[in-house]
Length: 326
Picture 1 (tube, rainbow, N blue to C red):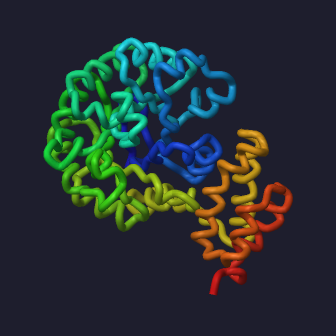
Picture 2: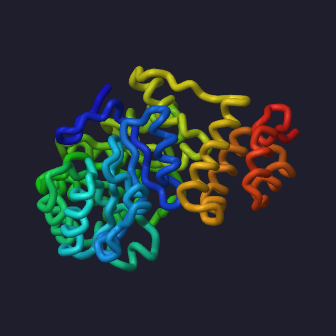
Picture 3: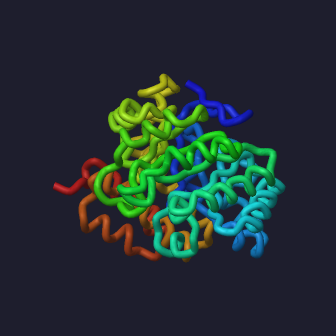
């Protein structure tokens, strides 16, 4: 089942969520290699990006010019929102996503992210500025509302569609929930009923079963998967296979898994440099070992070593079925 976002056609409606410090270029490339309808860059602030004028690494980080990649912008000022959108398009982006869902205090305190759900007039002005500045499709990611007393996502979705937004993703929590409790997929249904553009369900989708439940309860057109992909870059392809009949991914095990993890480790070091890359990849190594059930002592060795060659030597042992914790 394909999904159209304006003139773009996604092979499957299974999308990788933007996650700060996680969905960087090495991880997005890995997820895409298995098969994903779309991957979304880590959020970037509009004004800061324009004023900094992204260099080579930043351009790669945001996925300028890459197929199946959306560049996510956070915005609080109409002028800088439009300028950032123009810069993103000029650098070759195929798709822009607007973040109106991030609950982080730093983001909300700057009147960006999910803070915009408390001021739909300003949210609309930002959407209009970005959509009006570019010719590429623009999408929106947000939440159910600020809190349980203001579930205004359907109203925001109607305004967004009228302003030219071509797809909307709803995380099934309010801002005040942050990531606590459970996602309310059924509460996404009123958004789907309010608009004619595609709606994507997000939140607590960690496998094919939860993806199917999210779709059944929300009526959404597809799913966005975030934290569940950690340590399982093939998950989106597996969900797309189980739900939509896409080709089944070859899920690696044994030597193939060790090679994949070692390659991911090297890609991180190559992209960021050895010191920063070793820190960034550590969380991913932890998730791979979570999934493999690595014994605690071996896990500590992998995560604490500062010697890249030692880490690469330890990876096959750490992921070996014979070395799992008892």
